[in-house]
Length: 403
Image (cartoon, rainbow, N blue to C red):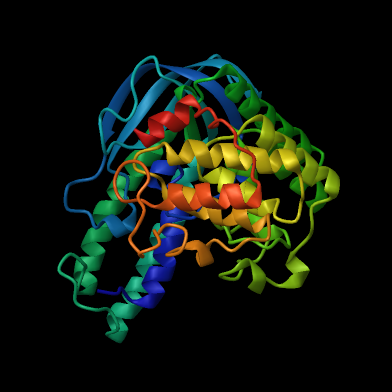
């Protein structure tokens, strides 16, 4: 059932501003650029100890965003990428949904703000929510939900409990830090990937300190797209900021740009820009040098749709060959075959039901199962003169994601 529109609109705001960590936020995807900008501190730290603290009684309407069970860590600072922290800090790791979310000895890259800042946002958002809901109760526009307050008295009671929880949290939050984003270093199994992430974060810190304009910000996204470990950070915005013939990727909503249209072609022309040949060349070189063998390769190839390059074509073929060996074959592989064939002026859809059938119309199966994509790809590759290449090497992290 649908919630009242005014309350729902506010709850999106509450969920975003009251829940600073990634695990608690709503589904809006922001690139690392914004986490760097909002962070007071960015550190690499090792968890020395963990504790869980309860605040709210069981019967508190979760829509008040009252703090409940919070996990905190004593963190030893190993490196500093932004700010000047002490050698040890206390970090509020967020809602303790799962005791195994973090572990002692874990090393994280943390984008931190003062926990009091998050507590203040909670307080403001809670007051705004109360006022909107109270008004809709009096107007009789709130629908009948079992767990929602039905009268002002019930709403006041829930708010009073949430206030107690919030006051306890505010007191506990003093001298603590809260992550707006966290990245486990074991998510970067190769040293070169970790170095790429560090370089990208430090570049953002430098550019933001100097007060960058949009062209420089786009340059940061290009730099991100050059490296496999940070490629998605660049593609998240290049996918809709640029005037390119591609499907949009995950959309960012930020204060810098108005919300994009549903498709890239519908976005206002004034909101668009184009990459220079030099920038496209750098993205192409990074794609050739470090294929990811995941759907970021698909988005990169779409971004390079009007950039002819033999090595890009060869790399795309090697990624497809690697993707066809995965079980099950990921959806992005089929889409990448489509985009790759378009670079040769070919239509993948016209081959479906033709190249995967024998003269009597019976499906031709290649490999395991009944997936005929390998057959279509092989026929197209031979007819179009696409070079036969060895499958790209699947990076360690991509292998873990598939498994």
